[in-house]
Image (cartoon, rainbow, N blue to C red; front, side):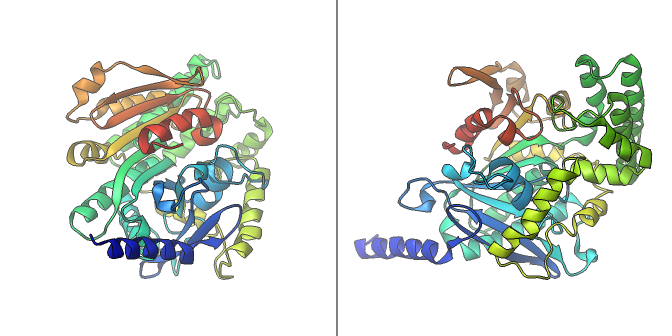
Length: 443
């Protein structure tokens, strides 16, 4: 390429970045906006350009963060509770990912966070619809930010994101192969994933018994409810299985006297859990646990006030958009898909693509308990299965501290993270930093 053309290309890249970056909420340059992923469906993204000392933002990778739920907000919860530059109270976060890479928070599926629909009929009903919407979002994002088309893209997720992210990655990969989109998709990492829901549910009773949180009677009662859920899954009665999952959750809370689903060592207020159990409102309990992450309303209220107040104003969001207003119905619309596994999608990623695939699990997590994750990984049928089974599990040491373990074969790695529950980026930043380095070379 001639020197003048190289200069023009570099200048264009600098100009694109300079014209799109804005001052948003918190430190560093940002950009945000809506993409119409379908008629009547408007998905919101919030990009944080890295604050690393680099000559160009494109010197560092782009990491997508997808929250769980379904219906939880990446721009809210993932951003302010886990890995964004500021915490919930406006304090600077030392372990923010933005220090090392560009981070793209996406409110997904439509109806989560600031994403909205013109009518509830436009909400998604299954995992593939979610994945296709995300591919549409990325087409819009790259149109607005063409400088990122060649930047390594890494998809990270958590919880129900462990169902959404694999299919999103697969659909995006195939769209790239078909020439429909330009993207340097490199990896997908599933954090404490709801990839095989029934394996997670069946792991609850054994884990709680082994930890001394329930006795033998409690174990048997939880197991009985979980086994009913499994029977409905085997019969492919998916909506009934979701409802029975909620019942199993209620039994578990009763028998454990209110253990925290996201970290079994977290102090809890049993009276608050008892309030929901007395109300016998299983649907409300499911929603509050999966979408709002905390039965205690105080912290959730702080986040809601932040997103509907200062953040809404700083980002100049339209007054017709109300953060989180569709979360409940977004969750409900996916009730028939909630308990379906996507193990086959992970298998296809491993055998049909060249993407790096990771799974990480906090060992204090209950809702997506590590034993359940290990069980569904053992069920996978893929080319390197025997090599993975024979591979050694090695320790993860960061600054001479044992932060967990990892095991790899082919393009797959499993991570066990010590001293962490469901929200690994917040619970163990050092362990999460090791995983970031393994996949992105930064962090």
